[in-house]
Length: 570
Ligand SMILES: NC(=O)NCCC(=O)O
Ligand SMILES: [Zn+2]
Image (cartoon, rainbow, N blue to C red):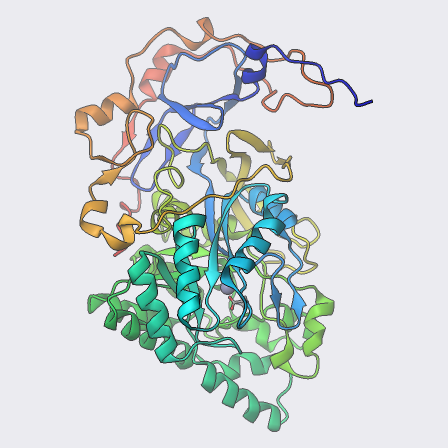
């Protein structure tokens, strides 16, 4: 006989799904507004001061803190079968770590082995991920070979499965040649999908590797020697040329060097529609690990393209993000334990490529970008969340704090610090490339689809809480720039595209007509019966008193945040 579950009265059931974030500064990519955020059933339902909210709502006081859109990491490789092994962060541990660090959505890559079906590979990823993910996720699909059937399957993935992006490789054994890249980009253009590319000249890497090994260079230092900056920059330039020939917008993953950034910026200035992503790894570490004589340490930093030995690279990349020469950041989280890295003990080309970053990306970018004064909080939001949402056609559902948007929100305390360590991180991997880095900026609360999954720094994720998110084709921000620039989140909670409101309408949204003081409409308790074994998800302390005048005074829209406004991505 199964255990009976007590029924909860309907009004108490929904109280568990209500949340009010009070007194914080809401940061979007284009402004900072002092306003409260009311969430119900996973959706942002009200914004402003002195909101009328139902009794029993949990209240989180965000005074002195920033309320930002949850991070979107557009580049992870969880349980990725690669270089004769499998990455150790799976969809549970990987998304748990993501949430712990303030990322509320990830986009992973479906590995399609040469000759295998794209659809079958997609189904197998869905099967692996759906039951494990702690936050929402979407999927890019890898194109590792080319023929007509590949196009047919791409088309089905786009029309029936919400895939709107395909990644090609110019390196590794599954790289495409130029004519295959041409066909793959042409296909993306036809389908309205985002073409993505890993840009390194794989043929040169192969020849260099042979030469280095023959000369007896077998240690991890051989990794960067075999893939120097110009090998990355050449591929960036070639990929831009091919994409431009077929008039296909292009997304270059993990731009890791000055030379590659310059090649990308030059292409952009010629009018090529190319988007550049860089990594937390490249912004937070430099190539100094190459000089380390400890194999584990050096091998732990091996990824492709490599971290660069030029120590100015991280700052150069951050400046490029500030100036919009690069547009967004990912982690490329693809983690291997020390024992797996040892597969390359006698041959650097056998060290599984990949590092961590999904948990620490937000903190590292805050530290190196905002705390160091190179970017403002708005640009931080753009490069960690909003731009990814726009590119993959999820905006304004994701990537912003607006009426009708998903309640994927982080309460960010810029005054707290934490020190990164493999001993305390939530990832499965036994190494952390940011070990010992002190970061200002701590995600104190992380709300995923309306549920508090980091609660006063305590991680309380639920396996399977995340959903697969379908990404529609033809993202306006990639394919229809003129119209996209007129679009913004709706004012009525519909999360649909609407034209820009007038300033008056905007002010109304920001400062709704003051109503009764909150203390007179809220119930100072949310405790009540709940089903056996089920916690009230939104239980917490409740602040009763709030002075109306203070609340009114606090309703200030910051039009020009310090450090300047952030810009668009073309
Ligand atoms: N980047 C890396 O070294 N590993 C993951 C696979 C890839 O994206 O190249
Ligand atoms: Zn990758």
